[in-house]
Length: 347
Ligand code: NCD
Ligand code: ZN
Image (tube, rainbow, N blue to C red):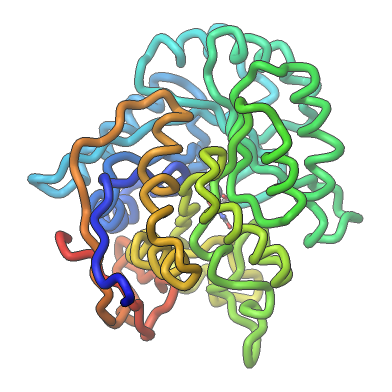
C-alpha cells in the first residue's frame, strides 16, 4: 500500500537566496516554515564580502522570521579576487559563517564581482583548507564560446579537478549540480567533496523551458539539462549516498524581471520546496531516503548538530497560488496555479 504520510527530522536548505529589504521579508517566512536552517547565498547587489556585512545580513534575516519559529541562517561570504587571508580567519572565528561562495565572474545573477581566475585566490583557498572552512562553488565556466549546456561539464574538468588535486583536504560543495558528469565526479571524489541538488533539476528536463512556448519561469542557472541528466540526479538524490543533499537554490525575481526580453535566471521554489522534493522521492519509490537527503547529510557535511524538531508531510493535493507577494511586486512560484501532491501539515 502506498505510504500516505511521512515524518522526518526538520530539514536544512543548504543553498538559498533571500535577497534583501522588502523582498527578503516576503520570502524568509516561506523557508522558515519548513527548514531548521539554510545556507544563505551572498550574491546581493552589493556582495556580502566581509564578516561585518554578513553579521548585519544575518540579523536582517532573523528579524524577518515569524514569531514562534526557530530558524537559523547559516551565512556565507562572497569570494572575490581581493578576499584576504585575514577575512578567512575572521570568518572562521565568527562562528556564524559556514563557507565562502565562488562565483566565476559573470556566471550568474550578481556575479560581476566574482573570481576572474581561480589561480588568483589559491592563497585564500589554502587558508580555507587550513582552518577547515568549506568552499561552495557555482560550477560553470563562463567562456562565451562554450555552449550553455556544456558549462558545468567543462568546469569540472578545467577548474574543479585541478583545484581538488592541489587542495585535497578542502571541503567543497558543488552547488546545484545538473549533469550525470557532476554526479559521477562527486561520487568518485573523496569524502571532502559533496553536492547540492535542487527540486527543479530533479523534476524537470530542458523541455520545460520551451513547453508550448518560452517559459521564463523555468529559466535558471545552471540551465535545465537533458532527461538522461535529470534521471542521473534523481538516482543520486535517492541513493542514500551522503555526498548528495538538499539545496533548493530558490532564487526569487520579480515577475517583471523574469517576463522580460532579457529575463533573469532563477526559480522560486521556497514556497513549496519540501512538497516538491517529497514528490520526487515518492515517484521514485524512495520516501525512506528523503530524511537522509533533506535533514541528515547536509548537516553532517557542514559539521552541524542534527535538528531535534520534525516536520510531517501528507499525500494530499493543494493548489499553488498564481503569484505571491515579493515586497511591492510579485513572484511566480514553481507550479503556480497547479497542484502539489504532498502537503506539509505543520505549516
Ligand atoms: C541565482 C540568483 O538569482 O541569485 N539564479 C539562478 O538561476 N540560480 C544565482 C545562482 O545561484 O546561480
Ligand atoms: Zn544559487
